[in-house]
Image (cartoon, rainbow, N blue to C red; front, side, top):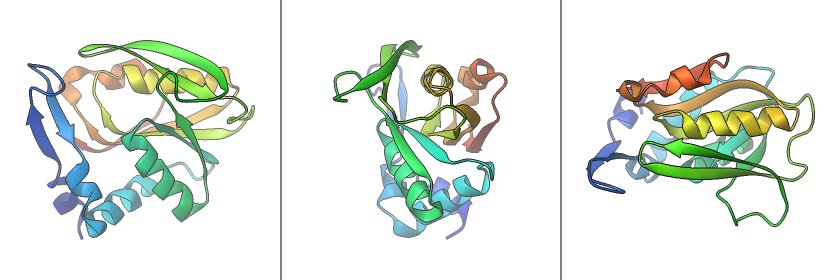
Length: 172
């Protein structure tokens, strides 16, 4: 399957999770094995060759990160919402386009000097990706890039990631 057909499966869900927000649903891509393969392969093509670890953002980033880790032999570190990890090394709070959130890094998951790419499904305001980069860097990791399936360019998230290479398969 071609990447453009796979990305065409993304759907918009208006007024979710609250009125005025348009949620970009990745589920149709996940349920189509050829679409999922096309997206994961395209993400891999954008990842720096020196990368050792995927920092996967909860929750859809986990799915993409696991596929990348398995297919190309990267370690995968889950960046979780509060209260989901038994041992937390660090936490960062950030603003969303519709509220506030936090991400936590598991203790001992990223070693100083490890080269890490941050992976998620959508880049919107950039708060989540910025928090992920902060966690990686405070643990001593080196962020080799931020890779997403979809960038909502009008929300300006890329500007919050200055100094990091950002790769989006599709920008709207």
